[in-house]
Length: 88
Image (cartoon, rainbow, N blue to C red; front, side, top):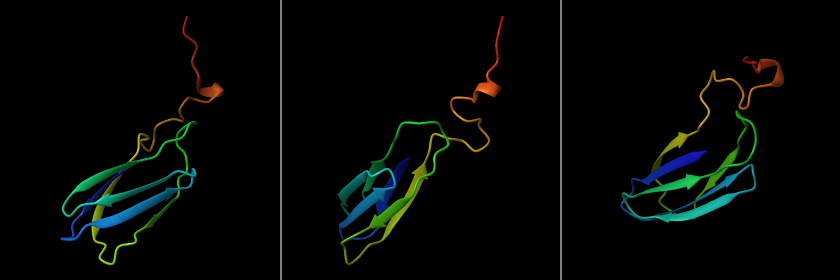
């Protein structure tokens, strides 16, 4: 999972993202700047994720985008044994 977070405030801000995988990333984001937060874990896709987002800043105004490598409708990665095809 990949977060792209932009601080749209005139003041700097802090941001911490805690993932359900146990990973935690904390950054200071300067005014009008963007920071990337990336999380990964081994296993088949899709996977369930949970995030807790927090800030110690008094003035916290951000925009964010969230990206994933899994596309809805794609088969599980790797395919289940029953879905594998044999070519001769």
